[in-house]
Length: 388
Image (cartoon, rainbow, N blue to C red; front, side, top):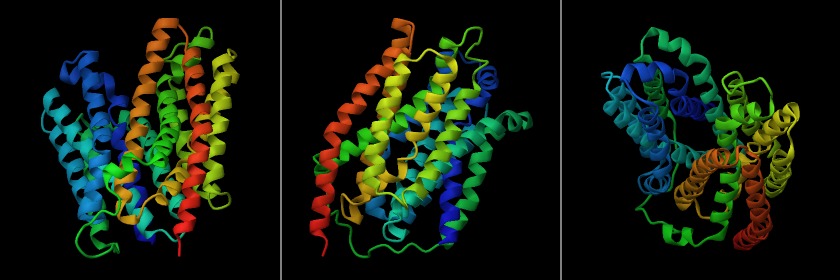
């Protein structure tokens, strides 16, 4: 189990690093490629869109060919994508490389989540999945801290570092044992059935409100603080974004231990209610210190529930369909992250303040809680009745 957890943590760190290895070197890359902000935005978002798009297909692939094979394929795509981007200082090659890397990160995340659900002791899957989620967030912080120094070796190392990490990961994956059901593939719950399952939608919305708010705060908190902090600029307050991701990583990992003491249902619903209170407060607060503390608390409570969401999802369908369900839930979460980030930017342009954005997300949060609480309790009741 220690070897498997080593693989899971290292993969999580590399996924997070791959996600955020470009923003810390943004100015250097713009000069390298002779690119404007619009062109560099395409490069930076290419991985994000591909990562989101592969969630459901990636889950189905993991269910069909097995977890180990899916993980080998994901490592190959991450390796190939980063190597392609490092071949020459060509923006087109870099974008294609990020598309391949996003395919690898999307498939790798979902396959690893299923791997954990298979190998974890009974009732502990959510705790172990929280460690993967925490490692992902910590990996993004590591990228922010190290890429400015790594880029001094040459621009290629921005891509080569995450690609080279794939090699020892493949070696570890080769030696670990994963026991899965044998026999021909036959999904016990089809994608069509999963799309009709209210619990899948509710868990996806919960995760979107949590993961989406973390990424939204990570992207916009420098501007949010500058809005209420006279004499300070977003550039001077850029440390706020790294702080949010660090708090998120610690929160996700800590949530795994919280899950050992409290029911996943209580953590899931309780954290969503606290987020409603925090978003409502951010809609009204204008004192810099209060805004900063409240935003950091929102990042914490939006992360401590990570393992609880996946623990509940693990109970919703048979193990052979977990990849498909996980992919669907994570697709909704990624779409939420993109939509909330865009929404906050549009609201800031239109109204000159982020306050209305927090008001809208607070309303969505309380609405989802009022509906979702009943649906999730019904899901657990049905699951308990079906147990022998």
